[in-house]
Image 1: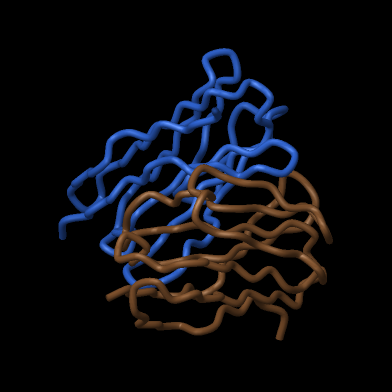
Image 2: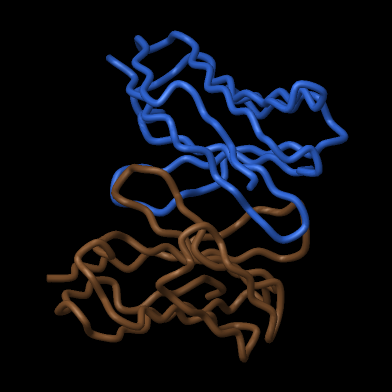
Length: 112
Length: 110
């Protein structure tokens, strides 16, 4: 079934650890996005990509990196996790311009 | 940088009444304006969208209006029902970027 998948769904990790959140979509979308969202609150754009090997920073990008080596895969890496990173991370994708974005189920991250 | 302001942050209405949520965007090059509904514990889902060459769009109880000159757009929900209770997000998009508003928590009182 065509969808956008995020793993893990839940993650508890210690301060200072390096972590990678996975996002894959099977819809052939060229554009992919990472957002940080506290429950029911604002969606903050972290990074986005408009195609393979093309990524851009959003407003909250300074402590994370992304890569887009394959169209369907857009992982987000936190080099050194901190308690302030505790949040939900949502991945989204869409095709072309002026189109709907589809969201994954999210990864709920807790840094202790 | 680009931003999208959304008001109000919370809205309570009686069942059957109308609800209006307003957004203002800063980048005049934005040309696509979707609205998303996010129920508790779920992912955001599109409910309606409008493109810059259209002033108004309606889908059953939901309508969106766009004023490009003033750079604002609004969501109108008529005959509200308890299942309309959720957080609603507007967004503005141009080319690649997709910027969301701050969200409105709508509560429909039975």
